[in-house]
Length: 277
Image (cartoon, rainbow, N blue to C red; front, side):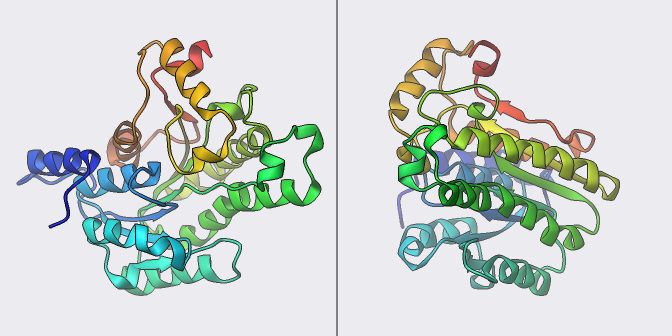
């Protein structure tokens, strides 16, 4: 048997704690887009959803990443019909994911978007110097794909639901070395507010989640990211760095009926860093 990571063991213990009682997400169907490995924020959210009773569908980027995500899908109990390739830059792949969900489940309650990308030369340069193609690519992958997900999820969320996307404090304030992703994440948060307004009458809630800095695969693309983590640990009121478990638990709460009248806000899971940063 494969040894569990500390995060996986945390949620296995949690499942045992709630065993025998209906979890707050019991019977819910959740799609997770953006798990790259067992350190991904999206994986922390998927584990939390599963621990509280949800069934999981998930995607992987391509054949190269499948070897890293297949064991995670197995741990989450994701069947082959709902473990699907999804590169939002490849025409038809995102649509195929939602088509499979419609055929298999006939509904969807939770959809989580945790993908972002900018070409390295644009990400590491000044916003002033960002190329047009680089900016458009970053906006397409990191922002517009969430709007596309919302459109595809809407008809499946027949009884309402919750849509999540991952942002960062650099959307609100200038964070050194975050560069072009700052404007892109700002656009993502604004888009989420408009989606919340438009989909609210159907009982669909929308949240950008803004975690503090976490050492994920995506974070390695940000120049001097270790300095951001050090600053957050020193300045956050909690004096602690956030973990993927922390983000997962908060997101699971927002996905539950306990949070049915919370929508449209950017939810910070950062130990309070945004109030002093």
